[in-house]
Length: 105
Image (cartoon, rainbow, N blue to C red; front, top):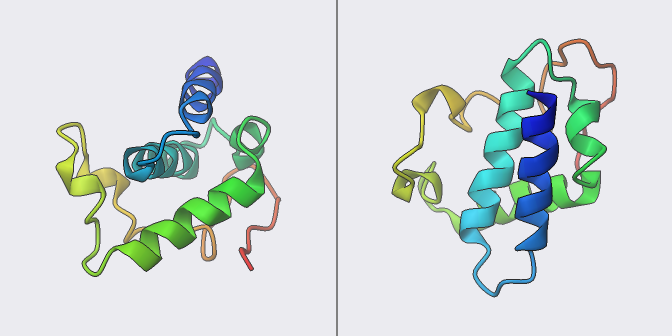
């Protein structure tokens, strides 16, 4: 799973220069939520591949662009309700095996 996070983050960040980033936002949020719910993937693993500032910007972009919850994610056929943003955001996440404080400013 660690290799999945590493390579997925790399592929997503290579596409970061595209003009339409909404699909990238959803993918980064999915990776973040995967680390959130897995006791085997500490947040520090994702942050070693995706800078903390980008993760905060992704959540800010999501919450500022969507008037209804999950507006960006609902277009994805692979969307799973288990990864819903309603469960956690980087501001209020409970850590599993990682003591890195998560507070976006």
